[in-house]
Image (cartoon, rainbow, N blue to C red; front, side):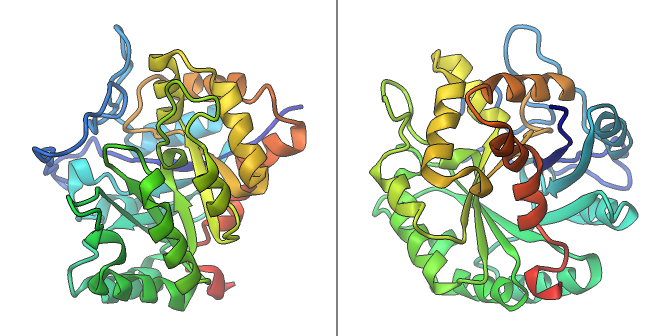
Length: 309
């Protein structure tokens, strides 16, 4: 069966550094160790001979056409541009039928809720992405503090996506109770968790997708991305990517999972990313592949939000 794809997680990085100057971030001293392939540089790096071609829009449009990708969620690359979302917003404005923008903003900044509203009205925002770790006491102010609730409330107004990545030792599992609380507090916000919430998979028959994930799956407004980062980690740790994906689908169902290339962070050609995805999906039925490859992301990420339709 020939499939068309919809990419739920791609970072665009401009060749033009005059109009779109880069302002790279440095990793915090207490940040968790990040293996090759997820290091946050344009193209990342993985393996002895990595392919790290900068994903400028003109280049990405060509790759999409070559690989039968009919749409893409363009996600702000904070490690390169911080909170200056100009490039992805401009690209989404220029190619409204292809790109759905997800910005990154500081959830603790008082201006963030109004910026969400402004970008939704002016640029057809599809969502907001937040990521961070856990403090020593286990708290996550960037996710569920009083200030961050104001950003969530703005998303609730439009029915936008909250796109979350938890960067912390111990993986994302310990953050699940807080995510469940937020899912129940904001039922019109579709919560999308990057990279399967980065479970601690090594040496686990369930690949770290344990009882906590089974509880999370009961929240119908929670979705997961399966990305090239998961494939990189499986490769690095000699884990069967196909069985991990099968486990995720068994818990959540394919209509709650979506594929993202992680283009702009993960290495390899775009074609190679899709080849690796196909290889990892051998245990899925065709209808499950259709959801994972295309339908889930197109249905969940809506420009202007669910309430705009």
